[in-house]
Image (cartoon, rainbow, N blue to C red; front, side, top):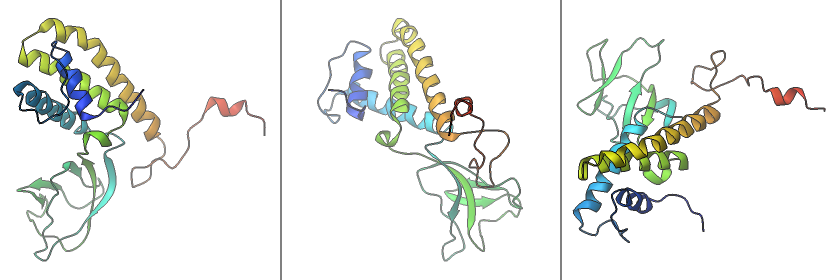
Length: 199
């Protein structure tokens, strides 16, 4: 029966890349299993840090605390202020810092474009597939130094990444003409199939 890729299934595929037997649980105490899971987490974070449609939010509000400071959550991978803003906001010491005013304090809400780190199971299936294949290649290279296994998986990895890019462009509906100040598309681009429709 077909099913979506779980973290356990991903780790087992990574292990199988070097001929290891599958496991039934992740916390088995096996060093290779722990290494495979660690690499999967590392690769997942690296992929998500690029900022895709599923983990990017525009104009996300951050509110100051009683000290007028804004703590940045642990699951924020990247953030950016609007080009039209009078501030230059970055993350520093776990808090929001304005490089323009050289200050950690803010008088009101700050709206930022944010790239979030989401759980493995919250990623779209094509991204889980891509993370698994890429992690399997990294794991093969680090654990046994198998350049043959890495080379064999490189084509798969490229195809999986292409599928992710296809997903991102389809879901994002990106175009160079019309996106509003929140980063979302407001104008539906031309679709050739619509020209042949009879209403």
